[in-house]
Length: 302
Image (cartoon, rainbow, N blue to C red; front, side, top):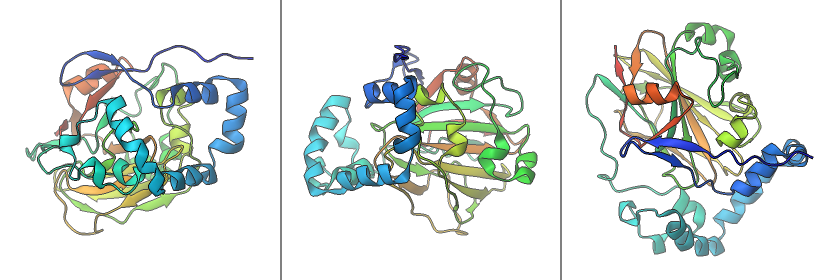
């Protein structure tokens, strides 16, 4: 029987420059599910299925789940002064989980020559999607056509820039637009609900391409057509979109939110339209995620 590894999940904090070890929510369970033969069997049979995540989501919607809020804030050191509502005002854990923040809690880079991170999280950048030997671990292949579900569209974005933004359960879970433009309606690609934590992705990057996901095309004047994905994951109750399709948005405007669970967004740019921020590119080349907040600089328009 295989045993779970002890390889830590590490990232670099943009604001301190420090290399940090992630306090993984449910780490023991994740390592069992993705690093042992029995766990992988259970994951394929039960955990990846939407019914499992919906059942967990209903528990997080129950009024009794409010009792989890204060211990969660204390354990993970969340700054409640950023919240739009006081912790005691949330009717359930899910309502707390998808909370809004005060308007001044996430300043938006207003330079029109920049694109911004769509979410708080740990970000991995790929300056050329055709020129990589791996993402979370060396040697893994990434299939753009499978992610997009459209061979013709994949051809258009060959050689483009990709940013994967991974949200942990402890993060602010609303996602936003990376640039000003006009968004299409979201298009659903049904799929499974595997974890998107590196513990799982180191085993199989294909989970990103197999999970349930939504695609929005953001038409911009400066950075071409940006593809914005929201990717569901285990125990994500739902993905909710709050924007109005075909209406002009600004960089940093809210696009929607995830309910309980870890999740991810993927942002794709056409070739020759943007360059990644220096620290994002540098750390990503070392298979190391960069922690940065929504609205901070992700790259610059060429």
